[in-house]
Image 1 (cartoon, rainbow, N blue to C red):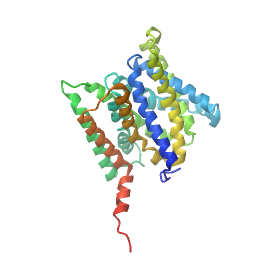
Image 2 (image 1 turned 180 degrees about the vertical axis):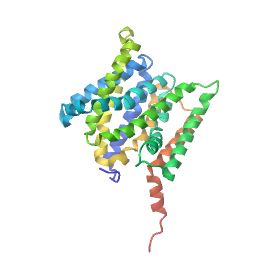
Image 3 (image 1 turned 90 degrees about the horizontal axis):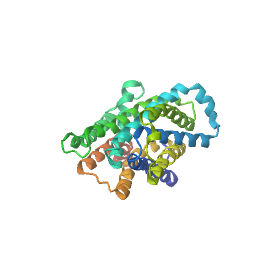
Length: 308
């Protein structure tokens, strides 16, 4: 499928659902990190999601052959696309709300473009892409600025962690191009399996989860939501939308995640965003729209003189 596929009511509905589910991941994480240490939370999210996807695939698409043949590639992809960014996000969310974390994480496409320009020959910067990156980076600076002051409500180190997670996602997006010949659900299950194996000894050694108190029912529900809804089901839904609408249309979900995360944080956690956070979000959204290119193309088509 290509990015020119038209969006109909079904695909828009699925895209909105995916935005809600991925926005919900920041909401679930904000609840869970109060009761479960970050390394253990990452392990639970990845391991439960991996098991769910293996059950869903039930050996289809040659998953076991792919795991044997590409095990070290899945380990590396799981490291930079799951283990590292999830850990950074969860540690950051011990200090910040779901809305701010989701806005910072929305810079992922910007870092992907910048990394692709350096590491690949087919992802070169164009003037439009450069303008989008600079606009998005300006939004990031606006978000970082309040944390530099001594009276900041969120420390600078915590604000930097979701940005580092977004950079890790950017490297993963470039590396994931190596898996073009493998069915996307297999790639999802493979990286989750690999990242679970990475996080298992880390969580056992660092957190010693058997010594942690039993979390309340709300935290258990949040963990299940993270793993089964915002990870396993989200991957299945993501690839379904890709098949229906193409990669370019599916990428619009990046713009939907922060509003849903903010809405959930506002309704259920009492979170509020300040003026700098709103301004930063708007600049990042503008940068993503410029990178996407569709708005510019629509404006160009609308400005063309009509022949009479």
